[in-house]
Image 1 (spheres, rainbow, N blue to C red):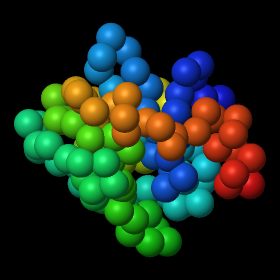
Image 2 (cartoon, rainbow, N blue to C red; image 1 turned 90 degrees about the vertical axis):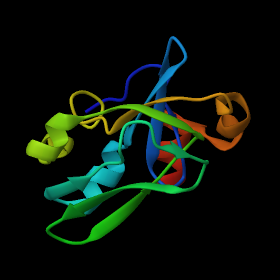
Image 3 (cartoon, rainbow, N blue to C red; image 1 turned 45 degrees about the vertical axis):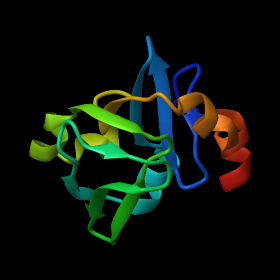
Length: 126
């Protein structure tokens, strides 16, 4: 499972990928691997706003429940409805169909200063 080009990762294991000022947010493959089989995903409401570091979602696996933190501040403009119905999608495709939310952010440039490129993230966590 390889990460897409241009992905930035938080040390708390979330990623962002920018596409035309819209940010896709999800969990890294490492986080998904550590969680094990995911059985439930709770996502925020569309229109919700979060500051960087705030809990915006919960992911439950057979091992544990984990809070998911906003890697950047912004407003949720879309949630991945597929995950609500099929949370196991996150196990199989964290960078594909397993994304969590899409956000608009006016603070991304400031907020992303401490995010790591994927290769640096892997070195940090492994």
